[in-house]
Each structure stands twice: as C-alpha cells, then as structure tokens.
Image 1 (tube, rainbow, N blue to C red):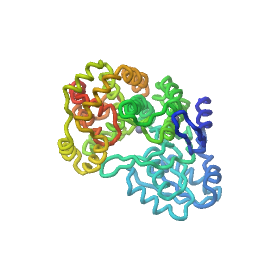
Image 2: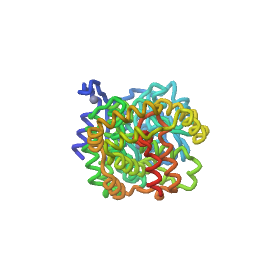
Image 3: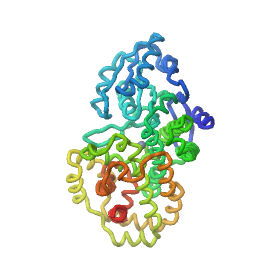
Image 4: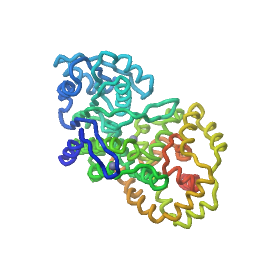
Length: 450
Ligand SMILES: [Zn+2]
Ligand SMILES: [Zn+2]
C-alpha cells in the first residue's frame, strides 16, 4: 500500500512533458486514504478553498454515513456549511446539477461532495458550472470516477459524459469505506478490471483510426491493478487493508483518465453495454439495486467483451480479407431507421453520436483490406493489453462480482439486445464496432446466448 500511496502523492499537482508529444498534468492536489481521514476535511477546506461558506452535497444515506460528521467538524472550526441533501435513490441529471448550482452560487467558496459516483458526478458538474473548487469525501470504493476529468449525467434517458474539472482533493476514510455494502466494493473492483477491454479499445482506435494514444496512463495504473487482482478475495470479503488498496487503485484509474485527457483508457465497449442497460429503464423493476450497480454491470460486460476480443483475435489475416470481400454493413438510411426504432426518445442523441463514427461500407471495405495487411502486428499489440477471459472470470468471482447476465437479473435476450445496440450510444469506436464491421457481432451474440 505504501508504494501506491507514494505513487499517488508523486502524481498530485504534477505536470510533465511526455514522449507522446503532449504535456500531461494532474490538478488534484491531495489524496488522503486512511483511518480517520474525514477529520482532515476542515484543514483541507481552509488550505484549498480559503475563507467563506461551503456547500455540502450528499444524499440521505451518505449524509447519515459521513455527511453530518463532516458538517459538524467543519462547523466546529467556525466554517459556515450549507447542506444540500438529496433524497435517495438519486440519479445524476442536469436538474440535480441545477439544484446544487442555485443553492451554491454566488456566495459559496467551494463544494464538498460526500458520497459515491452519483453525488460525485453531480457535484463535479455543479462546481464546474459555478467556477468553484470541490473536495470529494468518498463513501464507497465503488467506481473509478472520483478524480476523473469527466462527469456522467443522464440526458434524455441516456448517459452522456462531459468534461469537468477533477476535485482538488479526494478524502477516503477507511472506516467508512469498509462499511460500504459488499456489492459496492465488488463493483469498484469490477469497474477497475474494465481497464482490460477499455485500453484494448483505445489501442484499437489508435491502430485502426489513427487516434491519439499514449502508454503513460496505463503505466500509472498497472502496478495497482495487479495488487488488487492479487487481493481479489480479500477485497470481496471487504477486509480493510484490501479495500484501502482498491480505493488507491480507483484514484489511480481516475488519474489515468486525466493524463489521457478522456475516459478512453478506462471506458470502452464494456461501458457502452452498461450504459445501454441503464437506458432500458423498463428492465429495472425486476433487477435489484445491487444488480444495477455501474461496476457490477461493467464487470459482466468486460467478460463478454473479452470473449468477443478473443474471438476476433483468433482470426487470421485471410479471414479479415475475406470479410472485406464478403461484406456489407448497413448504409446510413438503414442504420437511422434502426436507431429511431430502437432508441425512441433517445434516438436523436444516439443518431448524433453514431453519425460521428459511421462509415459507408465502401470505406469500411477499404479499411478492412488495409487492416488485413497489418493484422499480425495489430493482433499482437491488442493481445498484450487484454487479460484472458478465464482470468477476468476468476478475478470477478473472487471479488464477489457477477460474471453472468442472469446474476444481474437479465435474460439472455436482454443481454443480446444490449450488446447489439450499445455501440449506437457513443461516438467512440470500440471492439463492438470492429466486430460489426467484420460482420461478426450478430454471429457472436447468437453463439454466446444460443
Ligand atoms: Zn503521453
Ligand atoms: Zn466505470
């Protein structure tokens, strides 16, 4: 753990020139993961916000868990605190962000978020809108977005990610973290493992589409990810030290996104599948809150995307060549019709996203021909990024996370639908698009869920 703590400390407030040609910078100044860390908040607020009132954003549950204590310690040091407490269950939407903004501005000097993913996303967006800093007091090691440069909000029924400034400080009190529901701890571990397919997708877009790519974000996370995987069982049991390790890895995963300047190293096809499951609200009533946790869904999807990768990477260059000759992916008109039918009120948003990566078959065919020429190299590089499906499955199980659609309350048909349609939700090219270009996505799902 000490090695990871030192690594995080070295990265805080750091700015450096990278071999990729870009300057990388991490704006988060402090990360405190320890027993009793919550009591440091007043000192951090003094140092990082200066004088004035602060808004404390929480929901009923996280307020009881930690918010009231944070507010009390702040008040006892003479700080004026304006509580902004939402009822649960809560969703991160623009309306919630606006509520915080209206209560916060113009007299607050900063915001303190007390909660997990949803509270963090709302507060991050609100702080961005108000032009103030924020500190997050994490209540569960359930996701890797705490210190990321983006906020995920629900808009017209679909999750959209927007750039937003990371917190100036992340505070994680291990007494609170280890009391978090086991499912939330397992979810954090599963979200972390999503790195495997996400980073492969990132490399895929670089190799196939020439998009920006850098190894640095992955180097930041690799040691922490290995340590968490070694301790998967202890994480699943919620042991304090293992949970502390997981939290450190989740912060480093956030930092990997900051360095990349996008969520690309930590969010690919597996996240799109999870977003699709969130979008299908009518499926929710039959699924428990634990089954719908972001990280838990991402874990199941990561395993499926890994199997998809394994299927594609088993192809020979001649198979890619053959796909380019066989072809044709649907033309725009056909795709548009499908999206309007499938996405209903979210159709415009999906169309806007998908249009940005859509290619007529003529171009796709040409690209596939070029890919076939470079296939051996592409295949080797992608393989080096991916954990094998067997390992993903074992690690998820050890950490108490779900591995099958059934375990998260989904029928095979629902999961089939999610995999076939997830790629319409975002303009980022992923393995789902590559499989579709090769004419193999429908085949894959029919074999997976036969
Ligand atoms: Zn770089
Ligand atoms: Zn995630």
